[in-house]
Length: 241
Image (cartoon, rainbow, N blue to C red; front, top):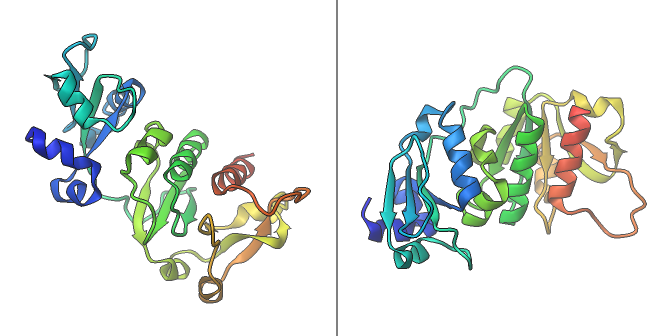
């Protein structure tokens, strides 16, 4: 790709047009190199380092650019002098793996929340993540930095129609203030776990059209609600406990 095209990858429409996205920072690039050992489809990536960056060894091609050019490719205030251009891969197959637990996020908007959730799902293992239409872009820079490479280890589907869930999953659970406790032994028996938007939760139209069983995370409820990422992470822990 030409350098002028690389600079445009901060915008979703150009990521879609060119079929690539940017990651930045030592940690993410190191995670990318590790991921290429088991993910051949990531080997089309290219690493870019600034001319003053410490030389590295990598199975991926490395290109040296000026410090000024590096600044143009990064979003953080203190660039680490290393980025990579990664191909956008096809979203995960609809068919689930045996024993896989599905987490569906309805119109999630906060990139930090999505990245944190993916990182937890990768840590616990055995999860698939579904993102409905109107969710934050999976390749948003803040999502990628918060996930720390987890999106390469969790099967992810994007632009999922929430009303299609009943055709795929026989039993769907959701969080609700009035539901059973997530500590109830029945909580682990569902095929899909549906979580609502950070600010609005699940709209009444979805609750009425998608048959779900409500559960709640027990607590003292001194405040109105939990952060979405915290709620998903607690549920993931409970499902793997």
